[in-house]
Length: 147
Figure (cartoon, rainbow, N blue to C red):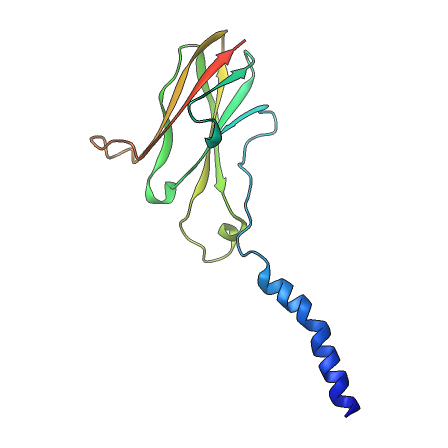
């Protein structure tokens, strides 16, 4: 009888730890892989909004895409005072780093720099580059005001 009680207590003590392990999310969100020197980070929530940036300071547009299926974000329109200044990409969840994981959404980060003061719109389109006659699957717009 005492052995049975010890066994039951031991199992009960293990249950919360096992339950917590089972309830832990398989996929934890991973932030965009934007370099640390980028101060202004523009995400999807800024679609159709205005953002202020400093002249000669890099800023980034961070969007989630599906490059594994060929859909990538690329600038379709930029003001003359804005130049591309790099790009980065990476996983959106910790699960994507696990062996055997394939596909899924990925961060697509495009960096820019305003080379002079001005205000204008950056239009990003998501599409398969080889499907030239197809409309974009998604469009992101942001007005950039460089001071």
